[in-house]
Length: 199
Image (tube, rainbow, N blue to C red; front, top):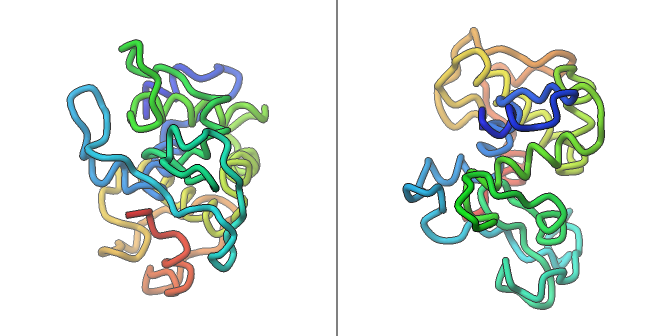
């Protein structure tokens, strides 16, 4: 994540913690780092079929002929940073210089996420610009708030889980201009289910 942020457009001022927050929310940082030495995930990380059947889910017809997600009627988000195949095609980069560009590689996916976040312009060292970039990444305020909470925790060196699935110290930082987490540190069950990483 640090290398991806460092390689982003310098005028973007992208903090690595924002990429790390996305990685945590989208896939649990590749299911807790289940990758090989080159950074490729053990098995593909795939989101649900975006067929519009799930409440609140959008419908995205197939954009890759099933090449990345294995589905030819509708798209699925792919890899540890959960890219829609058409978005991956636009922002894909070879993050580990191995000559292969894959959304299922943490280095490639992190660099692509950095490029995507910076694509809208703005100074991502500023909270308002971070929220705007996250809304481009996923059009959900709850998603953005959770990513920012993780980013703040990583930035403060917090290693416990700030999304309610583990102990939360009273000193867990709250990103600027965000509503504080519930007193017990847990998301309500509906929000937690909506933000759960794909299996």
